[in-house]
Image (cartoon, rainbow over all chains, first blue to last red; front, side):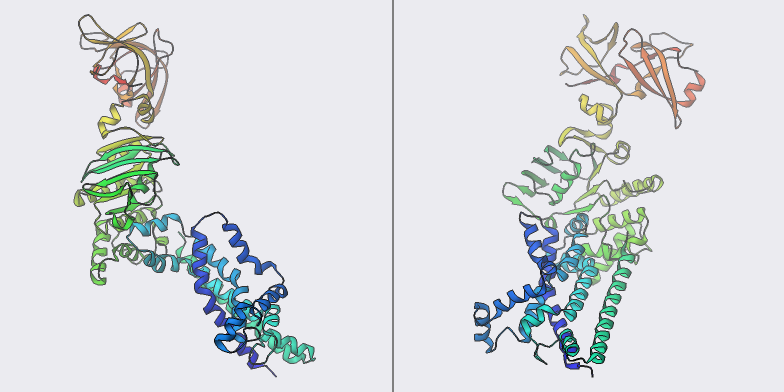
Length: 224
Length: 358
């Protein structure tokens, strides 16, 4: 039987990650795209770390950072009365951190593709920083931002290692679809594992296909 | 309302002082990499220079400790590739420059500019659906939308085909007659500058070589560098002397030319230039006479017909290093046939010999 609690938890986690991560990621991407400074490569390197580090290593560091012995863990416990590790909130924090490269990189490439002439034209039109951001930069970078949102969503749905390390396997709190599938396989319930895998595959494929299609249509209309 | 500029910078190198007259189209002409676009961007406030003093009439835009942002300068700009916002329609692009107006008057003003720039009927099209000329017109409509006192055009016609360009020249002149604002046009095309601008500034390696009325600069370069930039092929060296009667004479090998020397021309070795169209062919049936000024015996070395004109390369007799280039209408050559090898006499009016500064 399909574990709908895990499915809904995964979708909630994916949406919460998008909400928490995307706004700062968009500004970070814009900043990295439009400025050059010494040490920029180091910052880009740190942000890309989740792409190369094994999820268990990231998970370990996050677990230590969120545990009851760390300042962050103690502060959160004092504030909310519960531990950050092994909680849904902790999962959102971990998920947002490991998704940074998936959110920042496509958006950064999109901001980088806006030519200097466009930026300067916006200034010559008398637009302020926020007007330029809202009317010019954001719509032009939209395909990249859409791609960032989809990648974050799909990647969160499928994340396993970090979720297991930071969240454990608490049904209804931290047990996502990926972990639930693993659980079912461990207990030889292959039919449910298969159904949930198929659902995950379907959701991922449809989201990515729709976003690619939308981005392609947008770009084709604008191409000069 | 003239625009005063004093600019110094290291990369790109700029050491430029000039005054752009109010209400005229001025052209800033120079080879690639001479700093033209940097000057334009500095005027627009898009480029911070090591030292800049920029003022339009009594409005100071840049000075010691002062740098007004672009949106506080009364400018409109058409960049080289037009800089249109690709996600906005023609009307949307023009309206983007009118955010200071309330929405209804914004639409009205945008429509007015679209009509002035001859892009009516295209309001809803995206830039990707426009031709090169239509994009240029849209960029112009957007540039004039805020009724700027200064219009900056950065090689706006470079990406446009030749026939459309002619139309756009006419439209720019008409638009300027209607608006009467100060226009600064950056170009590396001398013909374009000659057709559009009444005032010309010659720029090389970030320095102003010469400025003045367009015809004056084009026909009377002040220095060898200016003459070379203007693509004048006939630059030679002679000796400037004063005759017993007090007239200025230019010795060129065994030849002696009367010149109209200015007060500042000093005697001795001097470079001089003659425009190819100012060399006059002496008719073979009337070889000599008192009407001739500075006659010179030459031999035709080579000739090429180019678009209704014939270019002739003439070897000056007894001065082996002097090869003159001359331009004649094709029909003149048909009437007075010359072929390579024929001996011809040419003459130069004293006023057409341009003495150059070192």
